[in-house]
Length: 342
Image (cartoon, rainbow, N blue to C red; front, side, top):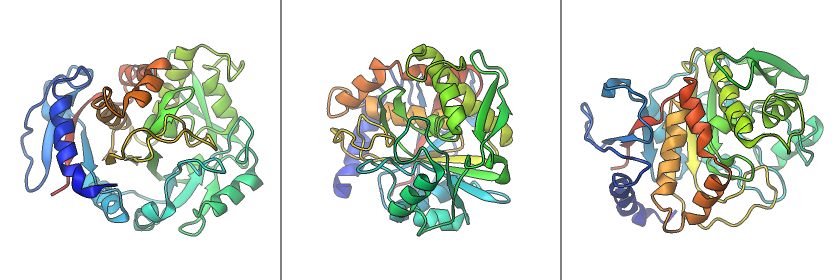
């Protein structure tokens, strides 16, 4: 984590981002107080003129259980009813899934059940019994109750305003929960370019059937031979169906951890060793703003140790997911970045 280095690094990143194409405008935001530094970034302006309409992304460089709790409290979001905590259990033997000890306090604070869905591509998490064993082996069942949402099949969510999907298939137990806290490990991805909050609520909450549906771009064809942009658009549209179901985002919030920044996903059991240093923990109630903020922090180092991750993102046209997500109303690529560090 190299904590003493990070306050200086964060200041450098924020300054650098103001002069990059990813973040073209920076200004002090009204209403910030105390130790919170608030800055507006516009990766792709959504047309709003009012800062009050711009989603906030909170950030800390403290990648620790204390930092995780602090970023959750900064959100000011309180779940209602039965709470699910969505994360990736990680593919054995050596993927970069979130450390259970890092997230334990937050999971307990919301009295959450950790949830996942089976994969659609084989491996140790494609069958329910094996997947429960992976969750146990990786330490998640020690900190909370755990459920595979699609162990009894799928349920259908309508997709409103999509150009690729008309419906999305999530785990049958998805509707058993009233609120969702989405914990994502931000990283690269072999097919999507990057994986963050949007991927976690689309591919991640998709049943095995739903994952194949999204990967095929809604055609029902091959998961691996479909049109790339259609796949990326299907992720955005599946994510919107989840957000819409949860009250247009009112009953769902997002935290992304930017550590172990490999070019490969946690679905890869033997990912490439990261080239990029750890950055911090970010959170928002807007998944598009959160993913864009993470992307901007990576791009701020595109000529440094973030070069390989940027190359992975661009080689898969990964930014198109964000473009389409904003276009269909999942969220905004314009955001206010608020540091909660002292």
